[in-house]
Image (tube, rainbow, N blue to C red):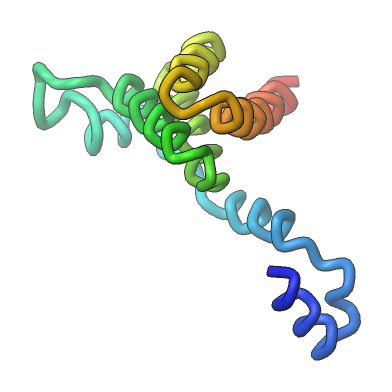
Length: 128
């Protein structure tokens, strides 16, 4: 990544202060959160009436992303956004990630909590 950054600066000095992480967050903002009804239709009980609801599926996805070391920042943040939209409470999100510390380790749990907190802080700002 550093080598690519140096090469980009050589082509365009204005890119010296370019932050790939910030750019990814900008791209991430272009992807809207699906409405709860759309998630329920695609991932919830619409097709499988006795199956898991969208909120539970998203909490399981969050657990899986944490288990992978919370390396997929965008996917993890999007999953938290979708889980909130599907009705998950902050406590449920935190517990889901915390439970994974036993299996994925403290560093993965800490990283996932940091990413989730970014989303929850953004949601709190939207509400004010």
